[in-house]
Length: 214
Image 1 (cartoon, rainbow, N blue to C red):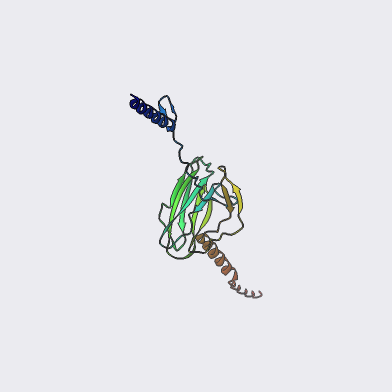
Image 2 (cartoon, rainbow, N blue to C red):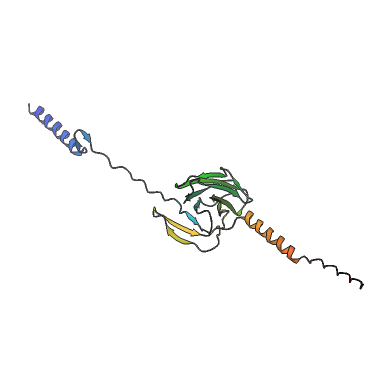
C-alpha cells in the first residue's frame, strides 16, 4: 500500500510540473506565440525631377535599382502625380544608344491618381546613357532624362540636389535632369542652320541703267 501511494504522488507531481511549464489557456484556447517581426524594408529614395515653366504640370519621380551591368536588365521605378486634365496624360519612353527598353514604351495616366510603373532597360556597353521620359498633358510636355550608369563610375546629373521629404516620410532628392539627346541635337541642328543662313553673303543688286535724256 505504501508503494502504491508513493507512485501516485510521483505521477501527480509530474503532472503539476507539466501544467506549470505549459502556456496559459483562456477559454480552452492556447496563448498565442510571439511572432517574429520582419525588419522593415526601405525602398531606394525617389528622385524628383526638376519642373520647368509651362511644362505638363505632372510631377515625375524615379529611382534606378543599382548600377547596371552589360547584358543584365536593370529596373527603373517611375512615379507620376498631378494629372488634372479629365482626359488624362500620356507617357512615352525612349533610350539613348547603348540602352534597350524591354518594357512598353507608352503609358496612359488617369486624372486624379498617382500612377507607378517599372521600366526595364538593358545596356550593351559601359558608360553613361539616359532613359528619356516624355509626359504630355493638355498639349504641354515635360521631358526628363534619367541617367543609367553601366560600370563603376557614378552617374552624374547637372545641378546640386535638394533633399525633401515625401508624404510618407521618405527622403527625396530634387535634382534637375539632363536634356534628352534627341531634343538637344534637334535644337543644335536648327541653330546651326540659322547661323549658316545668316553668314551667307547676299547677292548685290545690279545697278540700274541711267535713262537717256529726251
